[in-house]
Image (cartoon, rainbow, N blue to C red; front, side, top):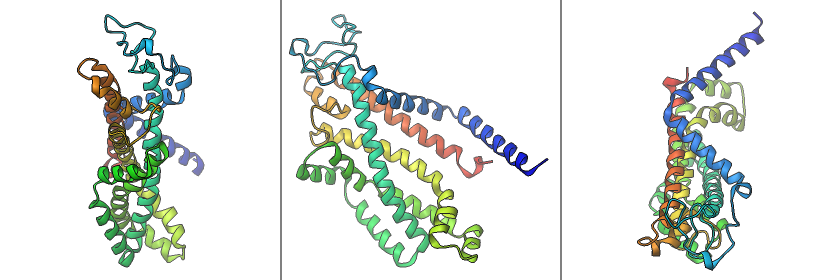
Length: 296
């Protein structure tokens, strides 16, 4: 059998094995379905939203959801205190949550991965400096620092993404440093160094492919972390500013009426819970499937 056919069969076998592992991991399947459903809703928000999420109608303020005896199918999830359709704001709010989570994870991932890989590969003074920076960062409470910065600079979508991205890199740095330390001692890295490969080539072709699994897991964790922090900042009035339909802001706007209209905080709260839970389930699934004992 030609070598190319053997390679194709081997790749097909690995793909089939990976697919079987994914299907057998219930947590990852459930998490993936929820996450990709939310992503599809966010992308198709203009088509799925029954009303303009910014349109106000004070004559229809605080209408209950459809399952209430006073509700109607015109506003399935009711309306808020300004008469805006709650379902439409929930759909558009998915965009804000995903944008903040992914944006903050990209910024923090770039910073933490570069620092962690450099510290793990070069060691010595580089490792000392990075370890010191990680220690300093861990001594700073994220929520309080984010509150202070946003209060000074001003709350907006771009500011929230930037602030969270600059505060959540420590976990990336710690995990990438430890992963790189393990990979650095492997024979294939020593072989690449022995044949004269440049540092950048060794890092990109030998180190990064072998630590990317850990990077994916940490990314899912930090996306969920950023979404929760954005909701906390918006709840305190220092995150995404009105009239943007942030889920955390929706909870904040409904907290004064929670005893009389509990659905105002229950609906966005459940949406946040399900999204964060699904992202964490996906991360756990990736970790379990890519664990060394499960790779073959």
